[in-house]
Structures are given as C-alpha cells and as structure tokens.
Amino acid sequence: MLAFWADVPLAAAQVVNPFGVAAQQFGNSLAQSATQFGNSANQALNTLGRSLNQPYTFTLPGPVQPYVTVNPGGYTPTGPTISPYNPNFVTTPQYRYPQSYAPQATRQARVPKFKIPRDKLEQARKSAMHWNALPPETVAAMNEDQRGLMDAAQNKAFDADLGEELFWDLDGNSGYVRVMSEDRFGSFLCKNFKHVITLEGQQREGEMTACQDVAGNWSQSF
Image 1 (spheres, rainbow, N blue to C red):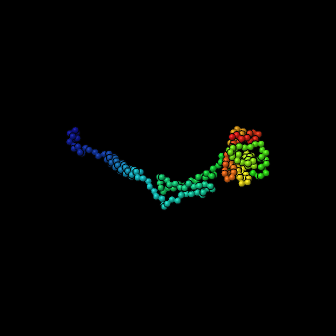
Image 2: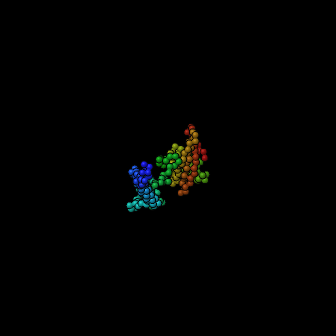
Image 3: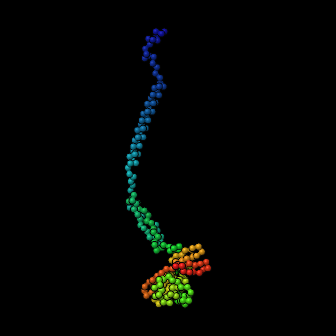
C-alpha cells in the first residue's frame, strides 16, 4: 500500500478549489472598480479646481438704469454712484436733508412774523424794563420811539415760539427780535434772542439771553 501511493504522480494529487477561484476573481473585479472610481474622482476634482481658479464674470443686458424713488419734498438727491467692484452696477441715489430745513435748536418755528402795532409804543415807553441787546453805539443812534418799539418787540418775544420774529417799522426804519434758542436749567427757562435793526439803510444786530423764574418774571442774564 505504501509503495502504491508513493508511485502516484503529483499532478494527479492536486485538487482545484472552486471557491478560491471565485474569491480571486471577485477581488480582481473590486480592485478594478476601485481604480476606475479613483480615476473618475481625480478627474472631477481637477475639473472643479480649474473652475475655481477662473474669475467669475457676468454681463448685464444693456446699460443699467438707476432706481430712483419719488423725490420727497425738500430733499436733494446726491445722484447715483458707480460701484468700484463692478462698473455695471449703479447704486440707488441718496437724499440729503437741505440745510435750510435744519431744525433750529429743539423746535421748528411755525408762527409767522408778528408786527408790533403802533398803539404799543406808549406802553413800551412806560415799561420799567429796558433790554440791552444792541451795542451801545447802536442804541445811541436810535431815537426814543425806536427804542420803545424794540423793547415792545422783546416783551412779546418772551412768549413767542422758537424761530419766531417780532417785527416793527417806523418812518422807514425797522427792526425785529428773533427767538434763537431755549434751554431749561432746573426750574428756570432761558431763551436766547437776536435783535436786528435797520437805521438809514444800515443793518445792526446784537444778542441777549433772558431767564424766567418760577414766578413767571423775565430778567436779562447776559
């Protein structure tokens, strides 16, 4: 028996394993698929990289008309501006509040000029309080009637709104008192007034500040 098995050729003793062959073929197929997927992924990444390296450009259909809203009353448009990043892009015009509309101090005057009637002249002359807003040389050039009207205008200006003018004229000369500003310091209300007078065609002016105490009396501060 031993001699018989020893004489059998080696090739005849080899047995082919069908499961091993199938596993090897599956591994080769999987490796080939992985290689193809890797090549496709590399190609896609290369294409994406080239796209990212190129600048993004676009064109607009014809010239761009700026969008302009309805101009609100009293506002001045500043005009459209060109974007530094894209010359085809125009920004919306902005509107600037005109200087003439800037509010004076805290309130806007809504009361028209008030003309001092002639019958107030005698009352102003008899007033114990005279206001020193104009320079001394201007006061010296005024006659008694003009000084009385200026005092009457100032007395009326204490109750006037911010920005209101109390106006008078007499024999070709004229003047007015304007409420310039107002502030409150504790229980005291203080207002700043501007006096303007035109004598023989020459305009002269001065300012004064007066404060009202808790009793309602006004006195000139400076």
